[in-house]
Length: 222
Image (cartoon, rainbow, N blue to C red):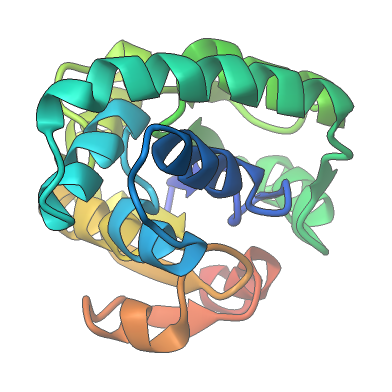
């Protein structure tokens, strides 16, 4: 398969940040008086743009969706503080994988349901640099529709002049990542078990492959 572009989720797929985003989101919702657990948040919210994730979570538990904006603001403030002290590292084998993929002439786009500020904060902690570890970053701020809309993948394709989605690999640690890839018509969709969701949750959306970590994708690329 002639894969030319890899569109890769960030937290849980390329970056290990110990689920701090979902732990912080859980705290922001419970602090507002709702009873939710981390496992519930991971199931409902993984991979989504975070304001939309909060709204969906409130709908799921019968909460008041008018609370979404206030909870999202609290979550954003808490997350900025949490990230200041966080030890962020790449998922095992991923940094080497990215460098090898790029040395083979393929393009790498990181995409995320985070805001641009949060995504760049993560990348700076890793010392990952554009054109060395990846070719571009696309965040929730860059599109009008969040996952599972294919808008981020289509934007990535347009940036690198790729018109055939079969030349694109999409990888992520949540079902919504896989749905995003399928909605874009990607040639390969890969679920990884290094992040938010379980094998069963990923199998439900039928990715082409499920690997323990992203670096195992090498075996289907070459």
